[in-house]
Amino acid sequence: MIHLHYFAGLKEVAGKASEDIQWTDGTVEDIVKWAADTYRAFDFSAVQVAVNEEYVLETESVKPGDHVAFIPPVSGG
Amino acid sequence: MDAQLMKPFEVTNEPLEPARYMEYVTHSEAGAVTLFAGTVREWTNGKRTMYLEYEAYVPMAEKKLAEIGVEIKQKWPGSRVAIVHRIGALSISDIAVVIAVSSPHRKAAYEANEYAIEQIKKVVPIWKKEMWEDGEEWIGDQSYKPGSE
Image (cartoon, rainbow over the protein chains, first blue to last red):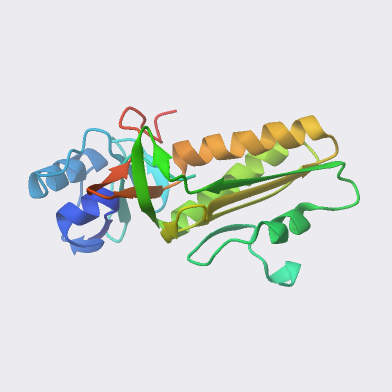
């Protein structure tokens, strides 16, 4: 199991701020593919991923128990 | 509030009080303090904003704000920094962000303060939604990926 976190427009498309999904092994790229297939109304092309609150590359592996956050382009300030 | 209880890098739902952060960074070795407040603008490119809705990935955002503080201390030695961002619904002229920097001399205090707001806009996971009279939209620079540098 991994914990997914959604924000801003993706949170609205998903209709939830977070969810847990079954997960044994794979990379960030695999999770982004899963999310893009699941939430087709959202454009993931500019989304960055954070694993356990740190930005990571798509090649990074994701382990059960990890927190994976999809970070759309930020707009604070 | 007692300075010891104050969090210098915080994301909060409460209204921001700039003077607290200025006080926090002020000390006897400092010769300059820059205090920046980012406020909610009513008109942007001819469109009228009714209010803004901010949201954050709070634990990561606070971590990133603290990292900006560490970078500033490295780049401008002798600086003290506080950076706080408000989330939730903000009205016109409400303060969304406060950055306070003290340094021995003024140039560093200005430069470091500007560096902080530029970094916030690039890497800190906070989002704003513009609420207009006739619609709403999440704002974000679609060309920039925060982890890509």
